[in-house]
Length: 250
Image 1 (cartoon, rainbow, N blue to C red):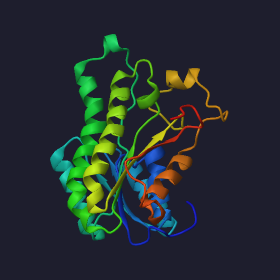
Image 2: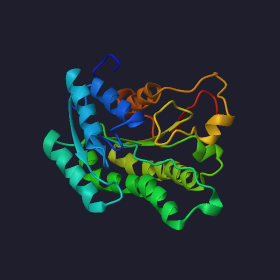
Image 3: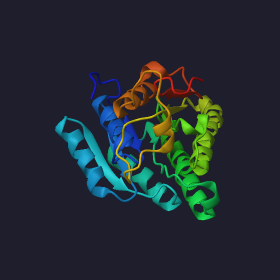
């Protein structure tokens, strides 16, 4: 975790915060001084391991299971976070699934599942958290998009559609929430070295190499999220900011 305590006194929720990029975002925000609710859908042990890592570094965190596609579960997550930490200042919508399925084999149920986690989840959490964000003087929402939502990718029509929709949702929400003093931005990671369920490297990773000549690290994404949540980024809203080593140049 980086030096500095610019988020001291703030409260953050990170959905999908138990592993990979979400885990590092939770650690980074805690390192900046925020109290962090680490959300996961199923992996409570991993979420609690993030909380323990934050505690060992002198930070404050808690873990809670909640399916971000379930409105009642999301309401419970938001209210539990506000009750435990006294409010909510930061929402990071990171929960996602990134499957590869040829379009001819893509069932409607899988299409709906991917869009529900990425898009419905962002809507539900932002909607439920809004009363708390409005009471913050530094409210910030950061949605975690993806390279394929801008460049496209084979066998990922559902993921591409959802991530592209998340960038659009960011712009619409930024307009609505700007008068309330809440910033809304999207961080779009490129090819990041993470642990995936299944051994196969995503096909678009296998055939593309970023101009910088390497894959990115989760901490390079987390550092950008931290900045957008902090006091120096209050004039930035409605933006999709890419962290991809030049693989896609907007």
